[in-house]
Length: 338
Image (cartoon, rainbow, N blue to C red):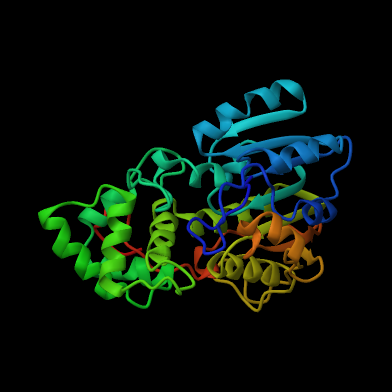
């Protein structure tokens, strides 16, 4: 799971490795017990996983980052027989787990990844413009240097909520013809020179573009939607779903999913019009945010929000991508809009 997120958040005050966000609140909502099987969809540095194992439960932990899985080998040996590490996106959890008593998801990029310059997630360090959690596929440099202006504008505007999206996209197109963007600081400086940067600014002018690129490269919103549906399929009746998100795009998807699944649907293109569909989840309280003490100890926790729900015994509903209202974006090869 993630040890704090935010990439180039204005609240970042330095490395905050191995600090799992809202840990006490996650454990309270997840309530792991001896003999239970808990899925940690975002292993990261293993903070949530270790705390769950120390409560006596078994854990199947997922991470698509091979470095995270490799680093977790010692913990897997320490808790031999109770911890299984799986290198795969958390959206694939149903391919590896038939039934679980709990699922916890800590969305976004881990501070481990942010603090490694070679991973290219942050412009606080000069590194390759990469941002791939799985270390494979299309990189941020590929996107910046090959995508059409209108597609870059959509990515920056929809995923970064960047008001200068069009200007930045056009600047990138002009500059990349002469010299492609290959380094994090190069792109960040070019954006700052275009839109201006004052020391009084709450965030660096490249922050939203970097967020947008990271979300796009890793299909984070699509992965989240598919993971929520997978969790619904594998959770036993009474099983707990706990999700910690770090920005409004993620939280909107989680909130919408829990709200939808906690009520009877008014209709679905997959279901008979008059079918009686029982709620698949019961919402557990309201959204929870970190307190001042946690934010002071780990500034990356500032934007975190926890939502939780308990599984009913109703059958899981079919996955419907339209239900999540995901933004229409270019395909990874940049050829069309999806």
